[in-house]
Figure 1: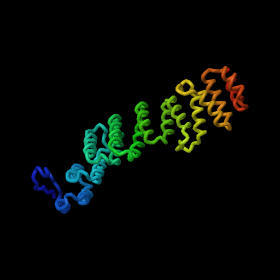
Figure 2: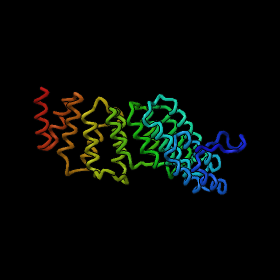
Figure 3: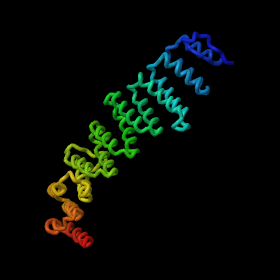
Figure 4: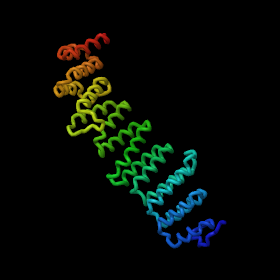
Length: 299
C-alpha cells in the first residue's frame, strides 16, 4: 500500500512511501539528525526503484550535508546506477553534478576525489579529469597528496600526452624525489632521452639517493653510460666523453665495460679516429676485443 505523506510542499514536496516504511519514517521524524536512523532506512530500501532510493538519500543529505557516510554511499550508488550505460548518456552528467555538489562539503576527503577521478577516467574526459586531479591536489593537505598521485600518474601514462605527463611528473618529484627512476623510465618510453640522461646523471651524482629498485650506484652509472653512448644523436645536453671518463676514475674495477661504452659512443658518433687513437690504444684487452669486433663490422 502506497501512502502519500501530508506535509506542506515547502517541507517535502511529492513525498511518497509504502506502508511498511512507516516505522522508519516515524523514527526519522523523532531523530531526523541521526545518521544511523537514515542509514537503517536506506538499508531497508535497497531493493526500491532507483528514483525512490535517490530521493531518500537526498532527504538525508539535506538535513546532514556534512555526513561523509551518507555522501560516500550515495555517490557509490549513483555510479553503480549508470555503470552499464553509454558514457554519452545524460545520466553520467547528472552523476558528475552530484559529485560536484558533494565537494562543497567533502572537499577534504581524498577517497571521494579518487572515486570521482576514476569515474571521469572511465568516461574518457581527459581535460575534465586532469583539472579534477589538480583541484584535488589544491583542496587536500600535502600530507594526503601521496594518495592522489599514483592514480594521477596512471592517468597521465594512459594517454599520449607527453608534455602534460612531463609537467605532472615534475610536480610529483617535488613531493617524492626518491621516485626519480619511475620518471626516467617514462622518459625513455616516450623517447625523451635527453632529459632522461640529465635526470639519471643527477641521480648518480646524488650521494644520498637510494634506488627504490635496489640498484647500486654503479648499476645506475652503467645505465647512464649505456643510454648516452647508444644514443649520441638524441643526448645533446651532457658531455658524454667527460661523464664516461669520470666513471673510469671512479670505478677502477670496471674499466673494461666503461672503455667499451666510450668506444661505442665514438663509433655511433662517427668519430672512428678517436676510437683508434684513444680508446683502442689506452684501453685494456676487453675494450680492444670489443673495438676490433665492431670496427670489422663498420668497415
